[in-house]
Image (cartoon, rainbow, N blue to C red; front, side):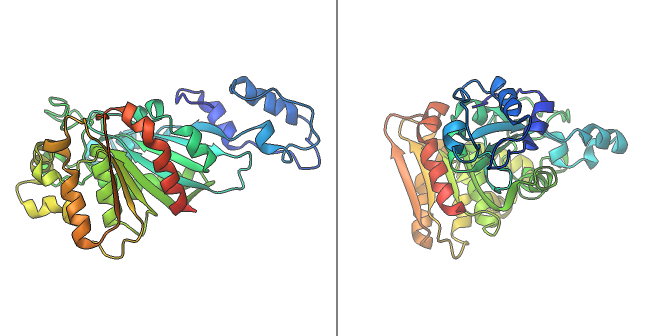
Length: 345
């Protein structure tokens, strides 16, 4: 597998256009194409003589993960043209990582799993640390990992604290003037899918699920509950499940949204689940019992009680011995991908 996001962009684009020889035998240059890919894909088995690539597809060339570009290159053009940061959309200020599972046929549409990361993270944390690529590839799922906030705006105080501002967008649309460009909610549900549609024709935007960790788990839950028509399923690791009642959420919401707590409830999963109807797909949450943030920041039992009251199917798995780290995520990520694969298919 190619697991590093730092791969030459020319190869990324060529990988997207990679063509498969006909079943009755490789066309001229077919073996050389595979050798070129193998040069950048050392984990593949040695090439063997064959009469047709598709016949022995998985033996000869197992599913491969190719990373694709960051924000479109036209970002700078748009920046120069408008010349005012306040007019820029959030996707023009952030990055995303996308790993597409290619089963040697780009005629097959690929499902999407959006992953939202937690406080202080970037778009790289999940892709580098989770080990999710292998199972995502086997399930034909593209992993799309956006950044956690706008960057480079130089708003006063944006980087003073690790739990607010840069790296801490909380997946909401800020209403306070100072933070008006913190619109990660619109970025996730509107702008990013549009970018994917325009640039990756093999992605099936209509079949998408969403997941995340900590602040990203909060984002995944709230975005799913408010947009069930857009996502087939949701899961989370150690989500901030009731932010209006924890210090992280109160700090973020008071600064981004102001003092009106009814506005806060629009981004609180525990508040939203009681208003949701016709949720039939089970919500999956994994929570480490040794998580230092469990009792004062995450509050999963509040969400569990709200789900029970609203008759919303929830599997909350308390995992003994696990904390808030990516060791925890990498241990159980396969279960979450299989969970989403069932809903997507």
